[in-house]
Length: 254
Image 1 (cartoon, one colour):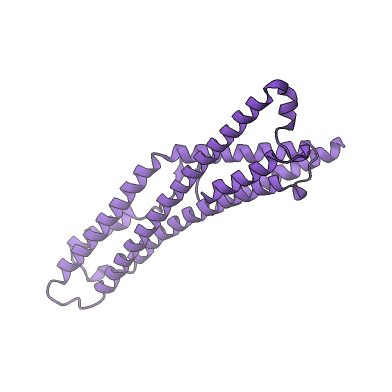
Image 2 (cartoon, helix red, strand yellow):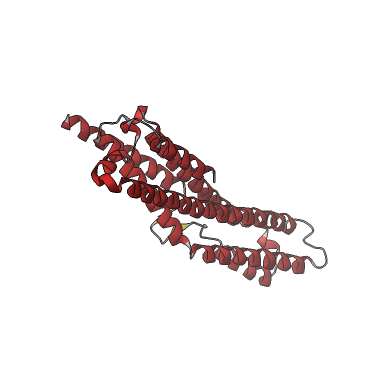
């Protein structure tokens, strides 16, 4: 909702300004003439609906990723406890049975987390659509203001758009990277277990658990990109490249 409020703020600032250089629809209003009221209503209605859809999808994705991070955090505590237990009192009665129960517990927890993750990734197309719409909005905004010779550094609207995109991307990519790191930590914590003190049954269960944890948990929307820090750097580099490109085109055309 914070993102939606900021979007509404700079949209209203652009709409109610008396200066045409601040009005994003001044060219369209001149073209539509007597239909300009209807065009204005339709444009801002679609903009608000699009902003709401993007906000809901991205924040829902953030919430899901944070829940998975929390579950992996709990799983890590269980794995650390297993590693510590495996090194203590290995000659006591019931040691092997206790180790087996702990291994099966962490294996079941990991399987449930992966099941929940795979179920949530079925809705990844919505997040991909939200990212695509946000990217198109940024590109069109940058292109329009550069072509119209509006200086981005002195324009509130383009700055607000850039801030929104950076906030969305940084928040989502940071959470995706945290989930990736937390899932990877499970594997390395499991390697600390004293498997050499276990019987064959426990070693087999432990080996299966390690095999299932060899891959990290990544959030890849339809396999196009992974939500992590490299994606955020790619978004920033692409935005800067577009900005410099259109700046160069404008300077040559003047």
